Image 1 (tube, rainbow, N blue to C red):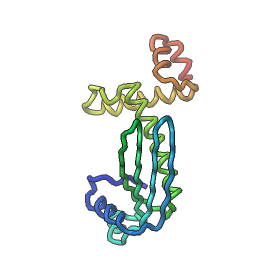
Image 2 (cartoon, rainbow, N blue to C red):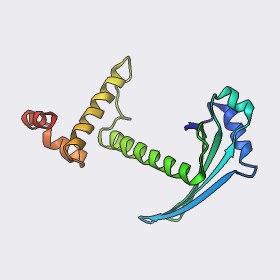
Image 3 (cartoon, rainbow, N blue to C red):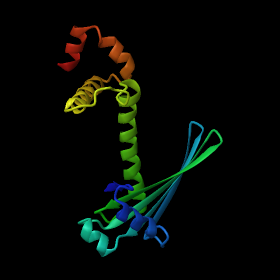
Length: 168
């Protein structure tokens, strides 16, 4: 399963057109968490053969609509996916949510705590190399059950012996 964005305009528009048809599967769930109300609706559509030829193995399109209300402000977000799997809407909803959860927790830590988006390292292999080092650091902390990343960075930043203990 992969996300479809507007840089694949023909596929994106094809799926957008499918959303005006009757889906082969539908699932909806609501969640209230920390003052934030979210309603997710997932619809599944079978892909036509002309799209499946270009996107080898693609069998279904998935449309996720997220309606969020937080502090009196409402927003709507649509996301499209294609899948080589023939599944049902609830399963797709669970899989997409799980992926978003992983994405958000990893990227939030890397951006907010490690300030990755503000990095001035932008040329050659340096961005990939420093990202790998950041991932190692996060994995070392998590392996040692040290979940408060900012606090633990301060804890080991000037203590090479403590840092070495974590790695071993």
